[in-house]
Image 1 (cartoon, rainbow, N blue to C red):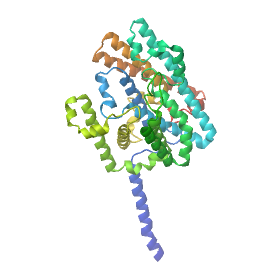
Image 2: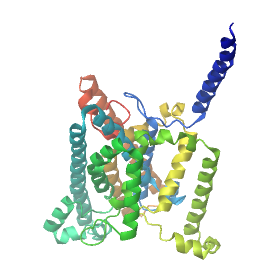
Image 3: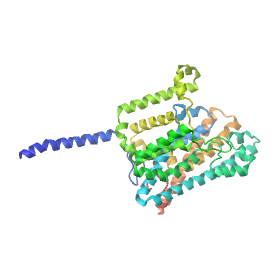
Image 4: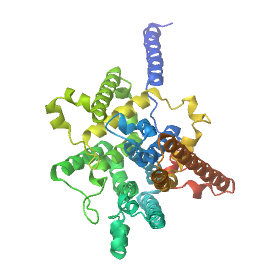
Length: 419
């Protein structure tokens, strides 16, 4: 061996050792890379399905089972999960379409999806009104109309219908889809900016969020008030999801794998839980420092308070750390109902709104206690799971008939597979 070979050999060995070390570190790091074409990201489906179940339970009157939902243990709830995953999956599907087919085609597909959501919202509004009106009339109980927020429709149906078509009038529990429609309409601009400078795009989103809080920007609602979910504020969570899908999550791998980050997240989740505990146990409220209360409250859901956003980030960081992409239980039949619901989120959300009012009606008329609330909650979840299985069966039947491209193309519900 020559002198040059003797000198180069240790360097090559050292480089090989470094490469092996990097591979081992990458294996230990959170698996948050973008799924490849044709591969599903089942964690997204799982948690979107979980969010739909939690939203359904939260829409029922409070009872024992309601204590299992996220909003009782921290600042954020299932809505943050749903909007983040919607931004992630939409950017995944249509961002890929932007690269493959160009801006015009991608924009057309996005607008088509926004139109589908709008049509679903209109149908949901119409049938929901019919459901409430029928129950209120049949049982001669106008309180149902008042509780569900449709009294203005009964007084001025012509004006109210127009306002509903403009997304300014909505009964109770119908606030998520209008927000989703507005966010989807903004998606072409978001993706174009993401293609240019992803970090700058996220920075502009943060700036809009700050301006919203500073100058009180909002969408007005009919007959008075504002949207329950302010799009100017909630866009931050949607854009953050899109940013993660467009490579941001991969760039955060080192931060998320840091033990310091993990302990900060645990500390904030514990702090959030202790603060939330004072809402339900008044005796503990005197332990809260007055200055801290004055700084924190009110924690606005309408404008996506920064405490809610931070709580979601902490939950997401911990989840990604301890739930790897190849977690074997993701293919367990016990989690299959959740995943199927997540894969057909639009249909299941609409169904959940109907079922929540039906459950509300049964609990009110039968004066049911905890046992009836449990039965209604489980029955609603079973119905949503059965419907999701039916939608999935129909989709697979269509795929077998050679229409896979039509069934999955441009649908953000199917992000991570086939789109």
